[in-house]
Image (cartoon, rainbow, N blue to C red; front, side, top):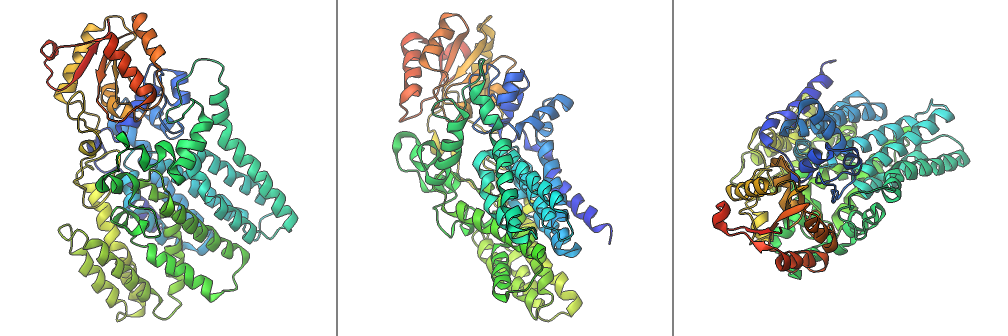
Length: 598
């Protein structure tokens, strides 16, 4: 009995860390920043993408700081960058168990922990270095604090402290992925108000105090960045170089409403985004069915129908529950519904791995719901059949990939109606978890994802993101795995050998997405023009001209990208007017356009 939780944690550790060294650099955009942030305090504090401190990544640096510290300890390796992610993923499983145990008991907690450990998109993203892993850990921490705050035997003072701690954790989540952390706030507030036994006046004042802590813990980094008196990198993704603009725009309303660079209208050239790319970049079309579509279905939706049925059943039963137990249903149900609706209708950039934020509430609801269903005639069999029916739909979208899972799950689900009472729970849980377990195992023990920036579990997409977005790329075929192509290596070697004492050995047009490979593989300073996608005004044309005039930069690698205007177009226009194209014969290239600006 006492070894069940350690066994689940060990399973999570294996799924998150097995063969981690084979995953290369993970998301090379963030890994390049990890290397650059190690070069100085300001770069570390702001999350600079390049060692010259020209521009930051498009997120706050919280999730990158542990990765930087890991590389200080173990050296710069792919596995040392990804190791903190695996640790945070296992920690979230443990903390979820502790949270659900307080609310619904040990058996529900163990099942919730197992569900989270076997959620495919969570396994995948916890093996990558995107910020969502740490975000989920902070949000589960907030849920734990709220659960402690509404316990019936807690004093008013202790309840207030736990509520403030929950607000602090959400603030830490904000500094990991900005407004994505605040989506869960309505559920946390509703759970506290529903579960607290303090007088309403105390509940309201406590909630207002928590709002103050939330604002302070969320916005201190934003204020620090925007009030910084000295030189600092341009805030990548913003329109004016401020962190506040990044909060409101690119990482805020743009993600919800599709404004500017956060939506499909940001596709180069203004042309309509191809459907294959839309499915990859946007998670398909917004709407109630988004969480169940081809992009999301195999990643997060396996147990979503069952979780929703459990919520409906609890609401319909109108159970007279103690306040703290009622708060648990409000917390996890509210988290699932609010996050799910926001994700479903978001009109901006939306990737499938964002849905890992739905994994904790789904896991908690399944854990508590299955335990409760044992007391209802045919409760577990009904949940198993619903799950099996949906699993058949998802599995047979790609029948060439592990199609055997569907029939096996269906047989197990039907069997729950006929096995003995003691076996019903075991067979039913197996029916619930077999399909996501196969998808998770494929991520842990199979080959690394073809696209490390947009990882997914299950059958891998054959869509080539590079071919869809950049039919012509200076420097040869682009890879987002952190490896230089032969052509790119020739460009880098030529620039490094001939840039002399220049502070910046090479500047790469096309943004950080093009420059990350060079940053990771160069002993010299390399910068990318224009932030992640190359559209940011960093450096400005005048700054670029100043670099060249002062001998700080000699070589620029061009990367034709249609439809760009503003500073991006001006920079390359200046380069073409003031620099000369290096003949391919000088460095052995064939497809790149390298400029010498001496």
